Image (cartoon, rainbow over all chains, first blue to last red; front, side):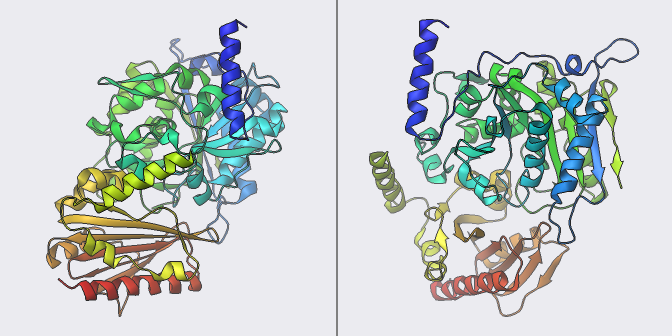
Length: 362
Length: 173
């Protein structure tokens, strides 16, 4: 390690120790990017790379009182990963997704809790975390469930854990305050981990953003856990747009259907290289009026992919189908960011290059 | 960090006190006082949006539609009590007709009419276990939601909605 790097690490540690709950890892250098198709070794008959999207429907995903059944959530997650990787054992599936993981690595699970009524549900996110812990035999404390704010995680029924035991769970900031937003005060100045001012990313149109320190300084790998929702401005909000919750200035990025901002954020090295898996919580869905509002239907599904563009494209077809059934126009023309993401090499939205598998658990 | 909070509070106070477009004091008077007396904690100072930009900070892409339908200002307050969450949205429009337009625009098939609240009111037991009351009264459209649909939660929400209704009656036209 160079002396500069040593000093950087020292200063980070000091900064984070002051907040009393940080356990850092040497995250930045360890991640190795592999294209989704390479990671899964999939190719079409003519040799083109194929992105697989697995969508598992579980008929008994809900309890009678419409809560998500914890055991069935785990069953769905495992089934989705087996279908995604084509493996027979869950240990092998996780090993294929994380071939180089070691005991010092930290995996961050980026939830989406902006809409308390339809978030990435704790039952699903913990099912992913526990499946990973069992299969990869990693220390639970090396898993961080996170979103932009601790207050939003709490509202979505997550139990905050800042300790050095068990799965950790906290936000980048304590509370994403509207008051601060109005005054244009940086959100990173509220209590919490904050945003990494040392690595500005160019998001287009002359603007820069800063990623959460959770991504840049605390996690070696990321698992993106979005929700199946439409979005009045961006057409859909799934895995790509979930990273608006990873930056310090989402407010500035909603013009022009959120394009090219969504794609550029996802193209940043830190997100692109560290993201190894996307697991979409499609237990519930919102097809009209999102991202706000209560869920409008129950797809009872868990979707998994290593290609965020393919997963979002597949989710968009599901949303469009529901919209058609309810006499609403498709959102495809608004979801410009999906195509832009493809043009940046983040994945494919060409249906011929997407292999969708749809197991059903009765 | 304490200093920052002091500065922020002062700045927020300045923003609140400064005359922003339109008269916010009407909405401020309509915000209920009783929740805090019954153990609800305000999560953050009430936020009053006064144009599309400030409205979009809270309700995202829906802001344009509310403005088109006649919204001038809107107040937002969030409360928490023992991990139950109550949210209030009070939209002040130009005319009675506007508030009715919003009420009709966001109607749901799953709603049931509610009597003795505003001019027209409805309740919705939402998928996922939350419960919502919406009503119109004079130039105001009110949406009150709670994260549980137990009878106690419904009673608390109705009491809060009724208090807002009483305040609207006081501020009048």
